[in-house]
Length: 231
Image (cartoon, rainbow, N blue to C red; front, side, top):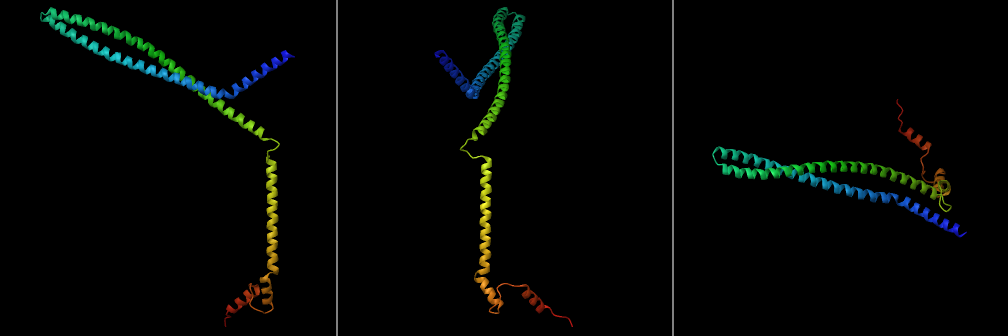
């Protein structure tokens, strides 16, 4: 019995853990993607720095090569002028500049290798993040649909109204409104038949006072009075 209880407890803990992981999966994914995006941004900054340093080494290399060419021209001129001492001094300076040139060329080769590697890394990481973002949007949409479905299922509770109940309430309300309107119409007709206006009209029919309502006979008499027969 004790073993069964322990197994049941472990199973409950595992199920609760899986349920928590399922509920927080999107939150975890969002944070993981933010961390990955931050890492890619750091790689981009490293790449930009490597490119800048490579460009700087390129400018140094160009300047060094230009100085070497200038000193070689001057050294040849010194030899032609019999100033071997000056030519030797120029040769020593050229040797130092050539060492700087070789170092710059080596540095540029290293930068080229690192820049190519970083470019591949950044491009691959960006492609993976794009794919992850696409999958995240699909997962979020699916989770929204699941939430709507769960909401629809949970809405069918004993104490909550349903669509048929709402329609029945509206139908009863309309019936009561129609009954009230019919009562108002009947009351108006009753007032018209028994009220003061009806009494005055009956007196007018007996010749006591003018009529309150125009009848067809009144209209015909008015038309005859306006009609002038031709001779």
